Amino acid sequence: MKIQNNNNSSTTFTQIYIKSNEAQKLLKKADRAVKAIDAKFINTNIPSGHRKPLWSVLSTEIEKRQANNPNNIIIDLSNKAKQLLAIMTTDNKGFLVSKTEVCPLPIIGNKNDMFPTNDLYRRYCYSLDQTVYGRSDFFDAIDNAEYEVDLLKMKQQAEAPEVQTSIRAHEKHPTPPKNPKIIKNPRRHEKARLKFKEHIQRPFEKLRTLIDFSQLDQTQKLQPKNKEKLPRKLKKSNTNEAKSQ
Image 1 (tube, helix red, strand yellow):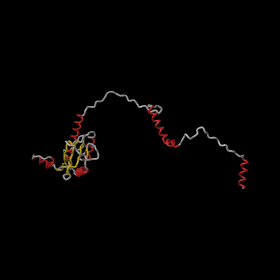
Image 2: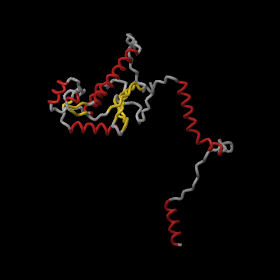
Image 3: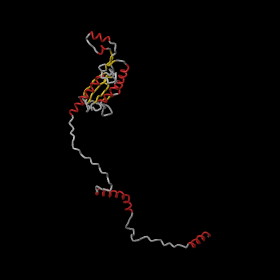
Image 4: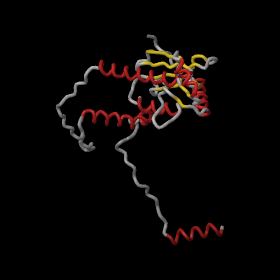
C-alpha cells in the first residue's frame, strides 16, 4: 500500500470526495446523458424510488449511509481523453486500499449487447426485443468501493481495544461562588497590595528627590496677616477725594 497524496485544502474528507473539477464536470455530463435517453437500466445499483442511475442522487445516499465511517471514497479524473474516472478507497490514516478506473457514461444497447450469449435460440429471442437497455459500470464500481470501506470499518472496530468504563459513580459537587471578603492566601494578597502601592507612588519618587525637606523649618508656623482695616465711612471719603483730584 502507498499513501495517497490528496492535494486539497481540507485535511479530512466527508466519506466521499471528488478531488478535481474535471471529475465533477464529467459526472455532471454523465447525469445529462442519463436524463437524455429513455432506457431500461439493468444490473445497476440504483437507489430505491428512482429509475435512472443519477450521480446527484447516489452521492447523497452514500453520504447518509457512510456518515459514521472514518474511511473514505475518493473520485479523481484518470484519463480525460478516454473519459475515465479513478475510484479510490482509503482508510482512516490515508493509505490507499484499492483503485478502479471506469467510465461514468452509461452503456446503451439492445438485449444482445447487454447479455451476450452463444446460444443461437436465445440470441434470436433477444433480437426480437426492441427495448433499449442501459447499464452503468460506474455505479457498480461505486457499490464495490462502498462495500470495501464497510469491511474496513468492521475490521477496525474488531481490532480496536475495548474501552473499560468505571462503574463507580463520582458525585459532582458544585463550585461555590467566590466571595470577595474571604481571602484564601493572605500573604499573596499582602504582596499584591504592596506592589500596587509601589506602583501608585512611583510618579512621586522623582519629585521627592527634588524637594529638600531638611531646609524646611518644621517649628515655624504660618501666622495670620495683621491687616489694618479702615472704617467704611473713612474708606469711602478717601476714595471720593482720589476721584476729585
